[in-house]
Length: 221
Image (cartoon, rainbow, N blue to C red):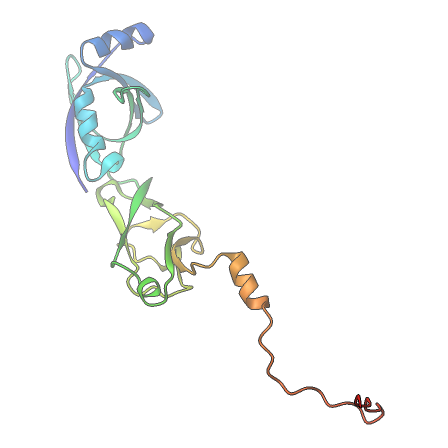
């Protein structure tokens, strides 16, 4: 996983007016949550943006290098952020300080690998993705950038579930083992499949013989 160092500074004031002044100076307000205590910070939005656009994204381990009167370093993860809905500019960020010896719960992107499944190229099925992120419990140093799922041998009608995933040691999946991750399904709709199953077959069978008790009809002369 990726590690990025950003600089921060503690701030003693808060409020909309303070936040507006910070943004005018090219900074954004932020909060560091540590052991139940919230600490107001000032961050550089470009550095936070670098975290968001890194390979690990919000799961990137951040070394928070504090400047100003209270110097020091904290290892944290980006828990939440706000953007301007009009121009996409970062407005606020929330960071969570980590203990390197305690596992945490994060969502990791699922990456589909293996190319086109045999159930698609051989049987004409369609690949359906049911889960795009997997929630896991893991130590901060073992957070994966993504979880790969190989679909190359997935046949028509088959499904890969959470319980089928091969996870590295120390990574615990939190979802139900029976939850579908990806599957290869028929391109027929349920209505088409029902229609196919209920369509009567063509009958070329011989006519049923008349009962012995039934008198044959007279032919027209």
